[in-house]
Image 1: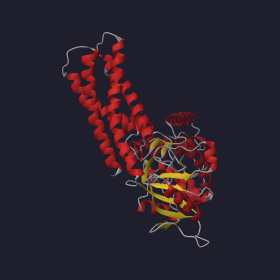
Image 2: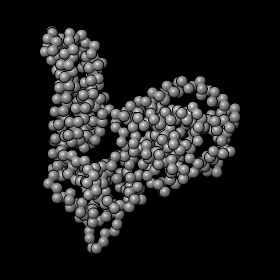
Image 3: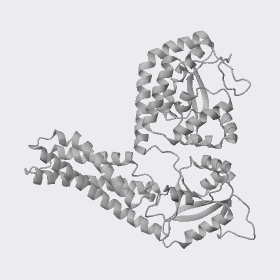
Length: 466
């Protein structure tokens, strides 16, 4: 069963059970808490229509419907408990608090009753489904197509360990990537296996629809590990590294009831789904409001651009966005036309290609304002690593493969690298700025986004853009 099919089934059952939950809550509340005559009034029907959608939205923002195949029972309990608790509190303040009840004690009974009914119905269905799913995986009837990376000895050792487990982990070894030559007359313990190398890792994963990648060699060279992380970070796969004794001693290994292997999972993006949803909402609302408020100001800028040099008002250029997808970035033109007739060139502080008015726009970062349109279109975010051209990405990736990891998130109008470092005038400076953006990527949160936007605003006010 595909992940999309599982998600649809979960959503349908959550919706159906939420209707039953509201019916049971409404009737029980009328009969046993308020001890009044029960009838299906307007409020009941409003609840039947609206509240199930509210629950689906709550569980969606929480990330419940992502990777349902990987759910295990303890995580399932946490998701259902936290999601239901938040939802009940919201419904209480929006709906129940306005009801006419003689005592606050009945409020407490109502909120408790709603939680018990909603949680019980939803959790029981989910528990049954996930239990069946876990049993299927443990018996090898369902699995994750897995690619193993390491030297031949480590791969054979890991494969033997995998086969010795009493219950399947769900990892069906589909292929291996060797980092050495098979030596000493050894051979891999596989039949009809796909063998490739790290340089082709991306095509191997896509072609064979790999779901899990497990690195079984703790001594993988740093440059190869960086290349690997960069290449797989935007592919939506689950990447794990076999735990070392040091990891076990530090207690960094998280186990669950489904997986029996000592591996640690690499998290490419630490931002929770609910924060990503809020981030997108803020992107759209702030960008739309900004375009409306700044429209008269844009007219003044347009006059300044057109009066100080010949050429178009806006500068459009192809940049690389999320998952390597190209898009056209929109900026107020700050350079004379045909400034790159001899090929791509990075600008500098004393660049004679920049107009006098353009220097002002760059110092205040006003030239970036039209990118609010890119944000509304979905090409960019308010905060994220600055988008680069493929020409420079290719150069940087040779020296710093980790740069490719930045493509797992949308590029931004402003970034931590832009705040701390400013405009880059060379590939070397782009690499230095990249380190700040990687730091942002590994610590991404709404709080950090607000901090970056605050510092960007200070830069605009003080006109200290580098």
